[in-house]
Each structure stands twice: as structure tokens, then as C-alpha cells.
Image 1 (tube, rainbow, N blue to C red):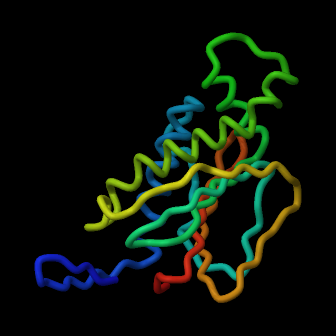
Image 2 (image 1 turned 90 degrees about the vertical axis):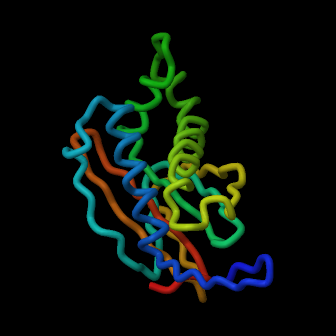
Length: 173
């Protein structure tokens, strides 16, 4: 990555780990806070590259643009997401009401997680912008992107599991 300004050219070497690790840390803290679990009880597999992204029950995609271009994906089991919905909404909700809030809640969670993570991106936090999330509810969905890199990290806890993924064509492994 190059940055130009005032006649200087700075080269930034940004790896997928530099991008996904802060998001994973923020996601674990956020999920722990929303569920009442300890951050230590969230067991994460290290970020790894995959050729196909397998999604959980509900997924939220959000574009990031600027010095880094790609898509972040937060994908979550319904059971875990239902717990978070109950925490987000102050009043009592029946199962139908919870089901109606699932997609919006995950979109808001994705916004919060990525928004709080950007400031942790090495030397580029001021040079990236995020779009509005797109949310998908589906079972057994998988995406394959040609000519791009996909990095993912799965996290398990007593309430279910979630994954944080990054899809990019302009980062090295």
C-alpha cells in the first residue's frame, strides 16, 4: 500500500492478520459484554485463509473502502444471536418479536464491531470508510470468491458460535 502526501511516499505493509485480528478481539469483547459470558470463555480458532466461506444462520456483510478494500462478514448461530437480541431490547419479547429483530440486530452488531475496530488498524485508521451492512438469513449457505483472499476465524461459546471473516483481493496472506 502506498500513501502520497507532501512529496513523500510511504509504503504500508498490511497483512490479513493486521486487519482481522483487531476485529476478532473487538468481536469477542462485544459478544462477551452482550451475553454476560467472560471473554476468556470464547474459544477462537486463529485466523486462517479459506477458498470458500461457510456461513452460519445469520450473516452481515459490510464493505470497507480506502487504504484497504474488501468485505467484513460477521456470521452467527441463531441461538447466540437471540441472546444478543434479548440484551439489546429492554422490554420483554416473544419469540416472533425476537425473530423479527434478528437481522437488524446483527447488522447493528457488525457496525459496532467494525466501527470500534477501525481505530486499531495499523497506521490506516483515518484512511478507511465503511458502508451500510447487508444482512442475510439462511441455513447452509457458502460463498466462493474467485481471485480474492478470504480469511476467517470461528469462535465458540456455551451459547453457540460466530465467525469473523475478511474478503479482500489487495492483501497478502
